[in-house]
Image 1 (cartoon, one colour):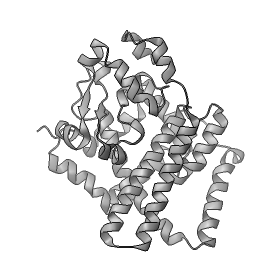
Image 2 (image 1 turned 45 degrees about the vertical axis):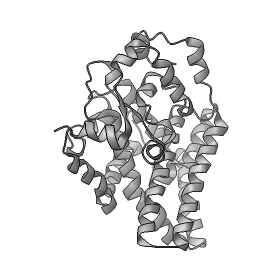
Image 3 (image 1 turned 90 degrees about the vertical axis):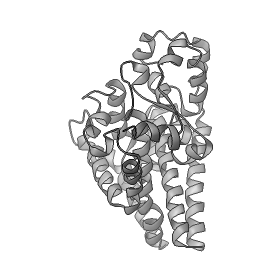
Image 4 (image 1 turned 180 degrees about the horizontal axis):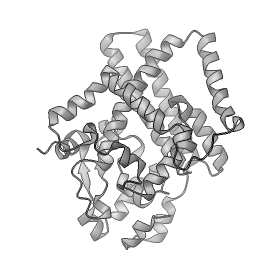
Length: 315
């Protein structure tokens, strides 16, 4: 369903056309999860066989990009856009994505739905926790922004982001959390980490896990998360209308692979129609572009490396 804000805009989008975009394609979503994992594993194996420092930097960049892609698929699942059975939707997403990045979909969902309900206000946890931080204050010089992004390769910024992330998404800190989770509810996550530790120990994979998961997690995963977060809600946004309070970025193939996997750059469309799964967002964008008010007011940026950087560095 569209948000109340979308209905208030009186967008004359054909209901039948929009309704078709809500259709869930679970097999496509699952296929994309396995494709991302295949890229991660192939990259790690190739780099370990032909190791070179420059190849390693490229490898952790690719792996971090695909970790970010898995997180985007989790985001769709948080809106129940993966499996129609909600219990299976969450269980499978946790085991294939969220437990690997040290959180759970249930905790993420509580935070994320508040973000949708209170966009760009003090009740929006995503906005409020970032407001006033130097790295989310714009405009800044192009050099400062680029150095902020590249600083993730030192692991220091990623480590600090990870601490911040784990604190924010700890079950006790989740929005609406009132009591400690029961042991039964924790059991699937405990079993996951026991099994993971056992597999890494039995097959002697702890070093590989450090090189090709922990280091990408503490560097490029959070680097791509940072760039996406900035692109969605920060920088030169007018914010005098719902349609220019967040940003859609039109991308090329390179940018889609590294910065905007699974159509996540269609962020304005997602806020207006959060029930539309990621693979239908381009069609939704085309429908909305037929509306005069959308064409006039929507904040659409062309490219991350060009348009977005220019918008963020206008000083």
